[in-house]
Length: 263
Ligand SMILES: COc1ccc(C[C@H]2SC(=O)NC2=O)c(OC)c1
Ligand SMILES: [Zn+2]
Image (cartoon, rainbow, N blue to C red):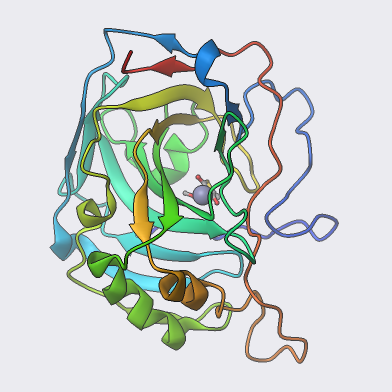
């Protein structure tokens, strides 16, 4: 689907870092969430996700993460509520992780790093007809961020982990159907922080309403180790590079408010 990141990464910057600071960018992501500075907003509604597992299409290695892509030609898998007025369509989800469990997430909470972070990417289908259009608009995208911690094995994630060896190299794709991304959400999705930010890889467009879940999910050390067995490089390249540390450096807040849906 269109929402996969089929853009050419600029050569002068490491692939996922992109330009360290975007000229004139005053709403860049990721950021550190300073809990005591977040503002409780009672108008923030619970998130309402309605995901149809049958809209799952494929899983592929795009050279900086692995993406699970959904058919976003209808409103079958949607997100609404939260700070949003409109309905958003799920187009893909992916992860960011480190080479060790000590770091890997893009966002942090009071500077606390997590070993990985899940991003569920949606676009505003009330206002736009294609992902490509929405990605250019300041109310175009909504991304749910979920922190991963190392602990017990995540049964729902295992189906995904089992597919990873088939997409070890960049640009490898494998058919993947019937996966419910809802199983990756924490039990509590009412408590989150929200702020206006950007994509965390090129083109870094400032079109994302972020919702970072307060509650993390747990995955096993072995499951994360399979993430790290993926490669940034394609089968043709002779230098094989492990896909690890695929997160962007944190960006200045530039006076933005981070609101919380909970007290
Ligand atoms: C041109 O469209 C794009 C470009 C980049 C990404 C991926 C970024 S955005 C995020 O939250 N994390 C990431 O790694 C994307 O994702 C939908 C869509
Ligand atoms: Zn991401």
